[in-house]
Image (cartoon, rainbow, N blue to C red; front, side, top):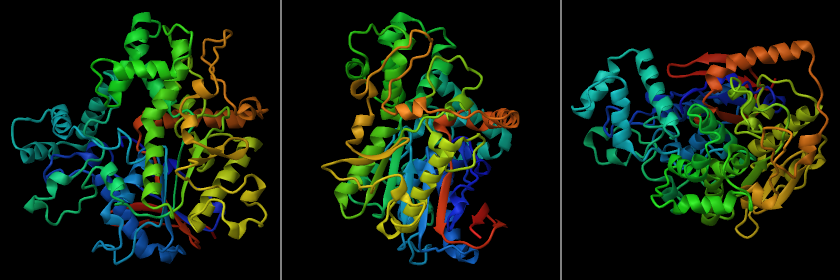
Length: 533
């Protein structure tokens, strides 16, 4: 929810199909999510930007060949969380007075983020609001309105710099960096007479909404990448261990690393009972857990569960238990290549002793035209991914029977994608081969299910995986021009993706069919409408 912009999500790979793609812009950081508990700073402004864009689509997308009755919303990371939060919001439903009787979205794809992650909702509202105000130099002793008025008098640069300082300080002290700069539950405004005309995006805790069946019950596709925790562990190493000379501190690694991780994800653990349970579940047996090389692999797995995977599984399970007739498709993206977002983000620390693996956001490389050279193997993965995403947007099913016999369709590379069920907990494993598997929780602990080995010939901890085709597949080499282009764009990306762990990744709308390409300037939005000719 802090950085990012639509220009980095060029949807050319998706536009080989009969769809219109709209990449949304929304306000970030303090400007998008400051919440005072009053109408002066009502919170969730960034989510309201997304809802405004969806309403715009309903009104105008038919002018560009799109079908307003078949809209799929998908996002990744904070975009995935936003997608999931909107699915439980009353503001996208047809019965809302501003929606002309039509639901704004008909299918959802939250990727590597959901409404149930710890970082999705700020539950420390008052303290985090005061922290934001203090960071700008405004007086915190007055009323909320006075504090917000003081902040409004500042320049844009002053507000943004202050919010980034809060973010950086929180990370360096073991936090995730959100502190008043993410979505909130706006229940405090429900009984405020001054907020009577204010649209409230989130009025109760997301888990409560799911338990009550209070969400748009439509086809949903959700999942995570293999090594979601790489981003978390990279940040821990870069911000805390290396800067404080702790990477080889035996005492710290044995007694402080896991409690620090638990605290970062909001787990109150004064006796270290949870941290010790983590150690028993994730650390290699018969190993002395006293250095970074041994611990990094298990930390990646554990961090991935805390960061994304547990929330994603719970989201799917709760939705299914409320209505098992609506399909929920789950995936684990485990396609490893030489190109990874991890290497871009930590480009200033190339000797970090962490194998890049399949990092948070690596799946976006195969859906959008991001700055990377792709060999034949990677281009084939992009074709497969775009096929599944198009099918889901068109049919509400990534492997629909209607097109099974058509050339270039899903039957050429996979079998039918079976929706999640409580008994089988089915999910699609996306590697070089696409295969149906059971029990998504088997992707939570690779030490337990597939093993971890330490490569003595390298300082890096190498994690053994079943995806041997991915790791050992022959890689094509780029020409000089390709390398130069990639190096240039890595530098360009650094300011945008350097904090990708909490980045406000893209939220994207796919609308079936399209005939035009043009840019529209609306009063509230600047949207690129791109469609199939």
